[in-house]
Image (cartoon, rainbow, N blue to C red; front, side):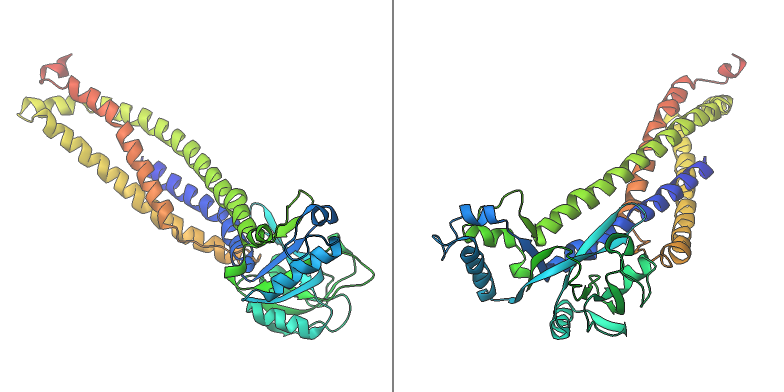
Length: 363
């Protein structure tokens, strides 16, 4: 019983650590990066039908310019540039996410962008020619890229050469466009967190957002993180925990019933020499708490070193962000063990009701 509890605890905890690499790895891309940089592209149809403040009667181009001018005038907005955009892919144990990054036409613009996002060049050089890019350290490690390689060759072909590596908390990348290759163009906005809600800004400007419009801002990324990452992973972990613990509970219930049957004579003897039923019950519960306590501690002792070993040997070399300390999960596993302990009260109480005197031994 102790072994089953300990191994179940360790397995569920390690699975939790592995699945949470999606949450930990996507968090910088979905929660940190959008606090500093946003992207949008409005369709001509949207611009034509919208009553844009300051250009109510203008054509689509005039309305778009009014929006850009209003955005540039906002306090906390440092730059608004029409630029091509690439995507840097990050692969976790389960799932992947692609973060947009801009392709500026000058090294000076790239320098300002890196400074704004807190990124630092750690190897190589900044882009100086068409099709050159600098990529986030974690992305390069994750995708097994080196300086001199073609960036995402499977997606973009031999069009973007990696010339440098940058390090930042939000996996920032940047580069210059290859004018022979169109990879999609957006307005790139460098702002502070207070200006991260572009949808709210467009509403104030009178823009009627449509299905063809693209807005990558802080609320949109938070929603993706919550729905497609955090809640999804939590659901998977809960499902796995429930299945494993169900089988553990059933196994322990069967084993404990057999265990109690072999000790009925012992409990009857206690009753015959003067022990009350509640005293025998207390003795049985102390045994159960010792079993569960030892199982919990051994599981804890197995889980953390195993998680650390997996992190060091497997995850870090693969460029996968991971965390091994999850007190909330430990508390949840403790609660599940208490639930199993409560389930085992059924055979315990049945056995208690059967305790009478030593005469039961003869039966």
